Image (cartoon, rainbow, N blue to C red; front, side, top):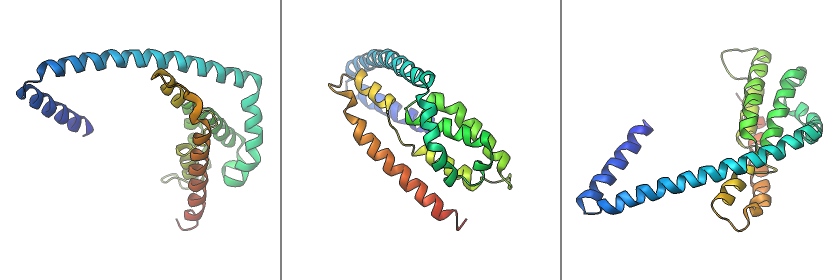
Length: 191
């Protein structure tokens, strides 16, 4: 449906632009935006490679395992059923740790594995368990210690200080995660 909406908006914009005599301006803006898009993607690819390398070093050095070890007692309190399975809790921890470092593409396989493991613990297979809902909420509002994607986009767009958003990002995502966990725990008593 969204494809149709975008097509209609672009078609109407193009037709109005051509009828008003701005065909040359439309052509120029299309070419300019296509060129700047390619530049942005190339810049992002390089920065994402850098951040993925840094995060791989953090993984190989054991930093992510240390953070996972610190999170484990806290997550055992939050996840009632998952705490009974080392595989489920391990996948949840690895997903959340990867997300904290801004590696959402590395976190995706762990997230899928975590949901599969949580489904194994689920007594009602036709609906999501409380642990599955909590995991989804924590994944959506995950605390970001290093928002590498946003920093990369800011750097690719020429920001003077792309990392200045670090503290605000930690505060915002921390508040979102806290509120998400709080409401999930409150609502799971009623549903």
